[in-house]
Length: 437
Image (tube, rainbow, N blue to C red; front, top):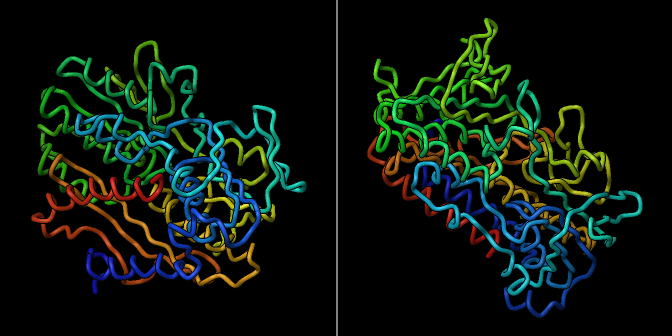
């Protein structure tokens, strides 16, 4: 099989096998409610795709383990799907997840508070509200923190120049700015350097804003200035841009500038809504500017000494246990997970494997040999979807792709694009139910 071609039947077979391997630890839904198996206390910091999934699946695998999830927000707005809001294809409210079912259906204790300190030696966490919780195992899934890698761009100007890389009010702000812009305006999008949350996120954002502009402000343009020379699914995105938005022609709605041609944004001047980019420090003026800055692990991971010089958290590839502190596991965007991307699906998959290993550790049992899956769907237009998928295993002491598994959408078969757009929406509904349901 050509490893670059998406073979859906082959991928689905391998993907289905991955969670089944974890199922030997699994308790039924009724057993989770009964709570009659093992013991121990697992505390989880962060209620995104990684943390919420881990909380649910530890209880699913062993209902006798106490699980406490600590998350400041009473709701969680997903980044997956947020680009669709910019196109007017989805309401932000439909991306807003709640934690009720984790408590009601799975017996997870959910505390809405902020962890201010982790005592790795004493095995406890301190909360902003004053409480201290002890743990047998701790999972840290704090997501990302944003870096000030563009001069003049920091939290003080987020209300004027949004990043919208943490979904919620920033998404609404960017959407409102695009809607308010006069037809004929330029939207500047500054794409971040690697690694960052959701590799196909920036080109999907470009696509979704272009979809809105095509319908509502057809004389407007998008200038995408990139700190990299390539991006995830580049050929597929450019094919879609050409088909839908005239990419590569004089009338293209999208101009993408790689780092080698002056795309790296150096400075922002909010006063005249301009950026300076590239070695020749070229000035670009936009009516709307969206800067997606460089990223690193969430603040609590940094404060707890879980990060290395890269700003991310190194972990044992099999268990996601920190290489710096025992009994602490780091999953999701904040962690270094070999070939796996920083995506919601990857966090969900890592959480299930980590949950299985923690249950085995608390039972003093041998865990199954792990495997992981990831799929990233992207919309290029309302009825134009593309995807990339992979299966992962441990090889040479790191997480690596399984050769011949997964792949990308067939670039030669445009007939599948509408179906993949449908799959993208179905994937979102499915994974959010799996995570928070």
